[in-house]
Image (cartoon, rainbow, N blue to C red):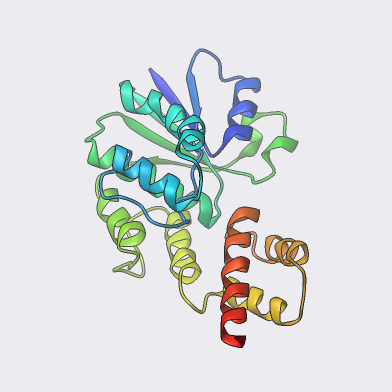
Length: 232
């Protein structure tokens, strides 16, 4: 049995309509760059904490994320194929999935396709794949602990594929108090730019982070609140 894991529901639908038939496809509807995570990946504690940190009602989180993951958690597969972008957002999600496979002692094959961010414009699956890797998940859980759980990468370069190393470096910057994105948003807030303008600018100027509107809004709100607090 083969399981395909897509970076979201839109890609899942694309894969279903572009020739992957007779094989299970699920979407990993998560944002691991946002907030806290638990030591035991995909445990009940993990899911409860993720829903809380994402500020999502647990029933909604269960519907979007947990239900999708049931196919991974409750069945055995000889091969797992990951379909993800090269940006930081996707790389941290890949890290989490590979860490889970490591921690659960998965013995099958793991393949990763790094895909075009504008995949929907292409008719062939082969046309959306930029590069492919065969991954050995061993060691990924320790990287997960250092990068996402402790939020303190221990090395400048890990023994993983290039896109993940780049993603870890970007994530280290992203969570810092003086990150490129926080500084850019702070500057725009002080220039009285409104939220839609800020979201558009960050999406256009920092596509390699891949953080999306929701995470930009979280940072924007935090910066606005901080500035207002300092003025009071």
